[in-house]
Length: 276
Length: 339
Image 1 (cartoon, chains in turn brown, purple):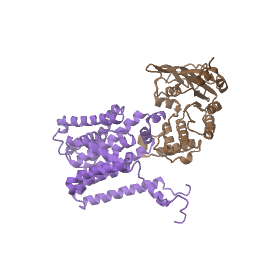
Image 2: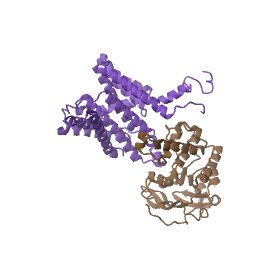
Image 3: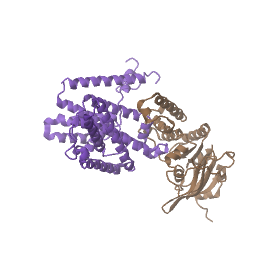
Image 4: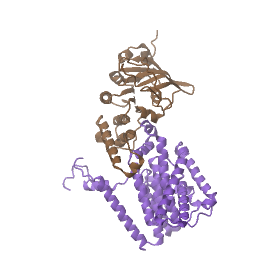
C-alpha cells in the first residue's frame, strides 16, 4: 500500500467545487528537466472528483509534458503526484492506468488494424477476469467474461453512437470518429481521471459542439474528473469549470473561465506585452 | 443484420472437430495402407513439422510484431531434450504412447523456459537489435550443443533416437498447436499481444503489462517450436547441431513472411508450399533453387504483406456467408431477394 498523504486544498483551481471531498489528483511542485532544459517547473494543481478542468497555454508551454508526467510516461525530476491521496512515485504507465488515470493522445494512437470493438475490449483488458488456462480450455467462465466484456464495450461505444461501427477497422474510421474511439477506449479502463489531449483537434464546429456535450455527459454518467488540453477556446471556455494556464513550463494563472479571460498575465502570454 | 443466419458455437466446434477427425482417419489410412510411398509419407511429416514451426513463429513475428531470428535455437532445445528423453525411456518400462507424450511435453517446456530466459533480456530491444540478439542466442545454443558431447553427442550428433514421429503423432501436434494458438489469440491475452504490435505506448496506457505479455508470447512461441523440435528428432532418428543453424531460422521466417505476418492460414500454406516445393522440383534439379528464390521475390514485389496479409481463415464465417447467400461477387445486401 502506498502511503496516504494529507490533502492540501490550496492548489485547487476552483476551491468551492467538491469542497467537502478530497481532490482526485494533486500535484505538488512537479517539475522535469530534460538535460539542462526545464520543461515543467513548480507545477501545483488539485483537481476535484467530478471537475472538468482545462490546461491551456501557447505552443511548447509543456502541456503535453504535464500529461506525460501524470501518466508516468516521464518520471518527474521533482515533486509528487497524489492520485486519490495515494503517492504515485515509482509507478510506471501501466500502474498509473490501473490506479485510475486514463488518457488520449495528441497524435491518435489507436490499434489501427484491429476492429473498433477490439480496441475497446483491449481497454477493458484488466476488467475481464479470465486466466490463460481458462482461455485455452474455453471454460464457461471464459464465455461469460467475454460476453460481459462485449456488452460493456458496446455500451461504452453507444455514448458516441458508435455501436454500429463495432466491426469496422479502427484505422478506416474518419478522423473525428477515431478521436471519439480513443476516448471510449480510455473510458473502458475505468478511470477516475480522464486526460484528453486536444480532443477537438481536426473537428469542425458542429462536431466540436457535439463533443462538448459528450464530455459533459461522460462526466455526469461516470462521475469522473476530466482534464483537457485544447486550443479551441470556445470548447475550453464552454465546458471547463477551472482553467490553468501554462507558459514556459510554469502556471501563470488559475481560475474560472471568466477570471482567465480577463487575466492580464494570460493575455500577455498569448498576445505579447503591450508597448508603452 | 437481424435476418442473418448465425451458426452457434457448439455447432461450429462440432463441424471443426468432425473435419479434424475425418482428416486424421483419411491421413492415417493413406499413410499406413501403402497408398503413399516412403518419400511422400516423409514429406507429409516434414510439412507437419514446418507448419508447427511457422505457426509458432507467427505468434512472435505476426502477432507480437517482433523479429526474432533464433527460432531454430528453440527447436534445437526441444529436439535434444525430447531425443534424450525418448532414448533413455527406451530402456525403461514406460509404454510407448506415454513416452511419446511426455517427451513432447518435456521438449515444449524446456524450450519455453529458454524462451523466458532469452526473452527477458532480448525483448528490451526492438526491431533489428532484437533480431541480432536472438540470432546470437540461437547460435549460442547451437555452439553449446556442440561443446557438450557427453549429453548431446557433439558434432557427430545424437544417434539412435526412436522414430516415434508417425502421421498420427505429427498430425495431433499440428492440431494442438493451431487450436491452442487460436484459443489464446481470441482471448484477452491474445488481444493484449496484438495491441503491443499495433501501438506499444497506447497498450501501456490501456493498463496492459507489455513486458509480461512480450515474454509470455515469446515463451508460448518457443513452447511450440520445442514440440516441433521433438517431432523432428523422432522423424530423423538422429540429431546433428548443423541442422539448427541460423539458416534454419531464416527458412522458418521466410515461411511466415511469405504467408503473411499475422495470418495463421498464411503460415500453414507457406509452410506447406515451401516444404513441398524443393521436392516437387527435383526433376529440375539445377534450377530448383532459382525457381524457389524467384517465387519469393515475385511474392514480395506484388504482395509485400504476404500471400494472405492479415487474413485469418474461418470455416464458420464462410458457411455463414453461404447460408446468408452473401457472396463476394454479388452486389450489396438488399437486392438478393429471390436468388
